[in-house]
Image 1 (cartoon, helix red, strand yellow):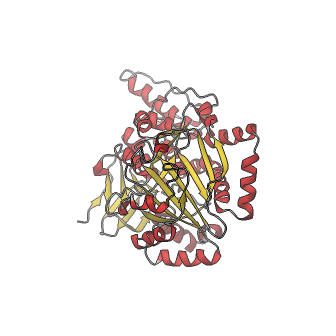
Image 2 (cartoon, rainbow, N blue to C red):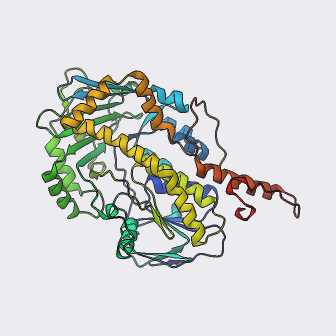
Image 3 (cartoon, helix red, strand yellow):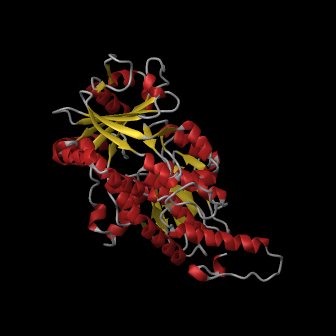
Length: 484
């Protein structure tokens, strides 16, 4: 039944988050801890346990510690030190050592099944604040309000709208349409997303450890295989803590196959996911791809073996895009980036800025959003470059072979610098106590974290002061008493 939510006179901003992905959920969890009102609108009608696995460690665990879920995360994730690259024939091509990451930030790297990580974040957001089946149709804004209408004719009003709905964000599309009509959108922002790879992802049921003894190996839970000549595929297998194999098959597209795949995908969906028929077709096309690391010696396993042990509702086909937009916000609307770690880092920085808002005026919100983009733009570019480097290796070709050669012969000191840079950005939420870490390299100084921390301390001091007593406010660093 359609409903209308009105905002009261609460001085805290009311936030509408569109998209219940990892970024949207983390933003909701942080706002929940500081009693900032919000809702999350999700276009899907149910939560689906889709996805493979991902590497997540020190770049996000400080915030998990602040939320009190770091220990839970570490029990459901598998620590790892190395990853391996092999050829389709089983020849070892590459070994990467990530042990320096723990030295830098005090945490190991972990492999975690994406659905389990998602469920963990779901526990941090009250169920009644996530509304399912809410596809955004229109967005309207005046100087002091923003209004969202969904496909069931419900209307939601608030102070801030956050687009956390992925690469094909409905919020971004509506925002960009408006800016383009006003001739205020950079040309690069309305060009098509780069599309040169499709992905088949899933995870098996728990497997027999006697049949798959490698699942007990904490050294190599992350193996990627480069397809042979004439086979434009790469496939990756991750062993998880609960005895599953999470897997990904990448199909690398050229101009012709990219165009055909994009046309097919847009006939079936409005976001980055195809339907079940396309996923099963790709399973059939890739069943014979060999698996050399997992299984007993001489088992001659293929990806088809894993497909048959993966429930069909956990298999999906998605498209991968890589693009840094120039326009991150306008008016009362702001966007999170795509990609798990990028989106979660964006959520942390944005939560800091929202918490520190002195008032809910358009001017104050514009300033906060500008500072958010300023802090996150360069780290997002660097993360994109790291992703492109990995994509070049997986994509083979001349550039891929060159990138592989460089990775095989990179000096240890240079590799350690590269890994340090990967985990150097690890923002925390300034409104929550920060945990003590055994890190050897201090993280990049987060301006938004420091800002939120100062505001938190000012509000704490005011709350603890005796009634009617004078509160001395340190206004250095751009923070004033009016922000309390």
